[in-house]
Length: 129
Image 1: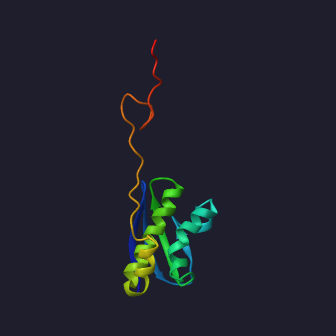
Image 2: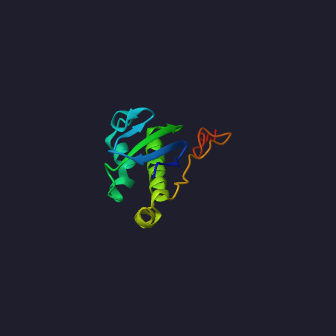
Image 3: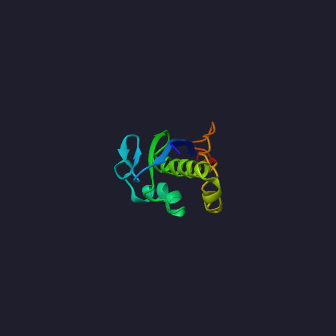
């Protein structure tokens, strides 16, 4: 096993993940994961697949996140790590990742703004007179 690559997506964010055997160093856009994501919850979300498969500290992860915001990028990173682990060893990890729903791409996107309205659903105030 040399390197496994995978792509994860969430909202408008994309994360390209490179997984390799190592000591558990995780870098996102050249920074440590703790310094890149300013919220602890985002780090927790990104680490979910590793904690679920009990592989924390076994793999080095280098990720490149683009688009969206930090929350979407954390979700994309989670999806990418889960896909990389799945392609690395399907028999061992697939069932736990699948049952937790980490292999499924979250298809929810922001609804587009419509013309004649201030937002996607909101209407301008009605005036009878």
